[in-house]
Length: 399
Image (tube, rainbow, N blue to C red; front, side):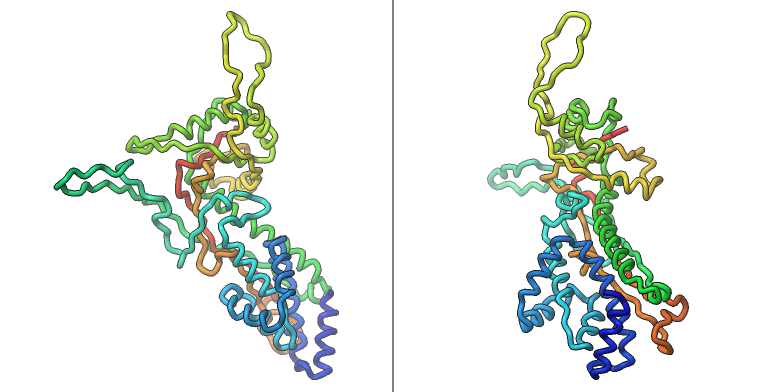
């Protein structure tokens, strides 16, 4: 549907006395902005939103109205859209479907198409933008409860608390809808741009997790790192992870269960771990020696393609220079420990929100805002991440 079509339908409603004539243009603009909101959310939630739309369409009117009231806290950013629909005596299934999608997205198993990293992160809700403390579990000085001999006082343990912290940050981007676009009837282009922003916003949460890992995890040096996740390199990585100690010499060994590799290393990583035995290539000089042909990294870990590693380095080329991180590096993790914590500001647990800007002039049908001739939609998300177990995640040198 074009802008002209929307305006024509609203003009017909005005002719029948359903709405006031002076509301045709404002409601047309709001419908345009709603189309952009829909484009964004469909791209952000993908199949999850399609499923929820089907569910909402199966509800009768009364049930839908009660559900909207119950879900108002999840869709405050759709208030203007809902008012516009009430003004023309219509309803929209979309806000309620978005509310259900946001609710579903708060579940621990929810993840995104581009990255599996969020499924290995615990969730936390922040009340403000202050530094979040205590995201790393404390460690006590005893490995077991000691026996208390009869008639003796209880022993007191030492308790180690991390002083590390991180905070939620505001990630935000807007799309302008210019007067020229209005005149040129470019609704399709704007909806496509909004959908692309949905993809960008979805990748942002995974980027925040990668950033936390790059900032807080140790980078494991490898003699032949440029060869990628070969069997010997993965064996060296697993050996490092299993033999870690704290600053006070406490053993904190971790397994390697997950590899997050750039697409260039995907096939090599799978080949390195797929066979139970290895075959020696070539011949050596001197006396033959008996060596095991067992593959020490057979079925070591699951492989996940994580091209956000390269993207974040392209976007922020100097941020990790001190650690010499490269686009060929890959992330290794003890996934069972969920070593990353992802925090969202209250109200953003299920995803970002969209906000719309209508003109602030009233003299003409549409000349945009007073200074820029523009209406707009913006997307805002408030997230942050930190390492809850820095021993369970590391960066393997890939160059």
